[in-house]
Length: 136
Image (tube, rainbow, N blue to C red; front, top):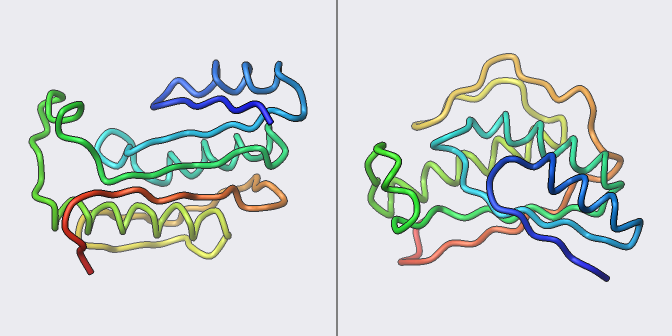
């Protein structure tokens, strides 16, 4: 099965490329957007891609990479804080995609009265990647 991978926005061009490849193409997206985009925004994009690709979409989420991300001027959290924030982001995304969440108050992230109105039949697969010491 052909596979197309993308990193960060714009997803629209990648989605068009996947759809142009036909019904056997599978799309994968890797992202760590909680600094640049709230996870609810990501969840909406993921749901839309799940609809547009008719289930041919997998999301990969990681806790970040300093080499690429410290340069945007927001600083760089330690590994414990990054993993905590990442865990909150994953929780928000997963629960919005299952229509289980509308409000969230975490240590790093907040959400109020959120709802995804258009969900794919099947929740897109979410794959988690992280490096460094294990954090619980």
